Image (cartoon, rainbow, N blue to C red; front, side, top):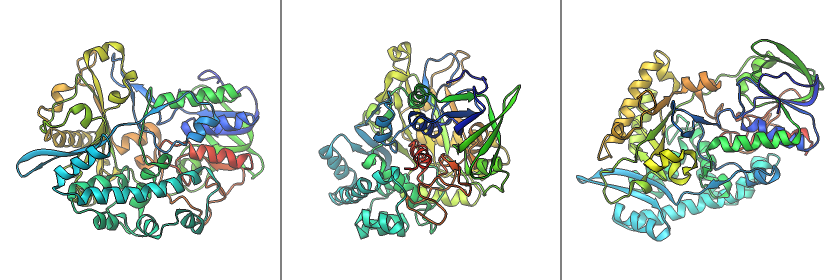
Length: 522
């Protein structure tokens, strides 16, 4: 691709793509491989958007997946089609949830094979019923995943067509018609088990288990259908390895990229379009037959001079840490290397999640902030330099729930600090030593920890309201105005290829693939 800051080589292209995040890169690679002339324009000085790896701590050789960090929704079809040099690794442990019951520090470890998980459930719950319900519940979602996931890279099915594809009325009711809380309460009795299941409905989504809008159902659906299995894998080399591979694929196919240029205007008559872009020292306008926008629906509207939709509120705290070693757990029966390899649930019991939601909805920080944590470097140590590996360093990534953007508007910095302190205190309650004691320090002697609120994500990444999905997720079927691929807009030659498209959200490349297919007339 063209060097950073270099203007485009031509005045007209078959396609101009606004935003070189992973979806824009996917679209560029597909279109360039199909022989189309393609220009990507990106306001930042690098490609990748939110799917990047970063040296977050000064002088420390640890390349962290800063914003997006796990892969589930990326179809292998895209990896194969684009010949990407990219791999993921599965996690043997799915999750560990520490609790204190009857005066004892214990927890539920899910993973390590069926027999081990069954034994863990029996020991934790005192019987066989919860494990049987777990297998039944996830057997059902697994069958839905097998049937729904392949449709995400096909033209949008109608609601009736997708329902027929699912071919299970109980599953359809549970996931598409009734609040998922009803099914969770029907299947499970243990509060901790209920909470573990519910968390997949709340990642970046501010909702109650029984929210009538079903936004929690839509979030849950996308979290359990990835790859046709629902597995969440670790990107080898960090998330930046994916976007680097995509950039290489686009470049190899002939796409150009002008980084450091921000698109400021799109003009179109539905047949031809012009895109104006501004850099630090110059400006240019290029013509295009098609314009694909990988930014948010709000940014698209502003570029077109139209009234933007109201932003969907983000609701997450993201924390990156580098540790000198993993902390010891109060539950001495569990190896920290297993507990943190999967998803480590903190304050995510079913009733705890309900309380946190009510408190945040009332305008207060949750008194027991829920969060989930995992250690990338246990599965993929390649993100750490050899010196850090020799010393036993590890990463931790924390994702906090039920922290809507509205809570930070008066004083983002002060509330961030207060929330981070409270969140780490909840983690410390299950550790045999404070997390602060095992934090690494950078070359200036500062603790290696950074936190990002929804307002930080809005500032850094232009995510409206700090929403990681760009807007509320949509069910993956056609609705009024969605078009054939779910990327269409009111303008025939302008497409939305970012997370705000139907079947967007997460690191998937699906909107980029689908926008490219729409351009190619597939």
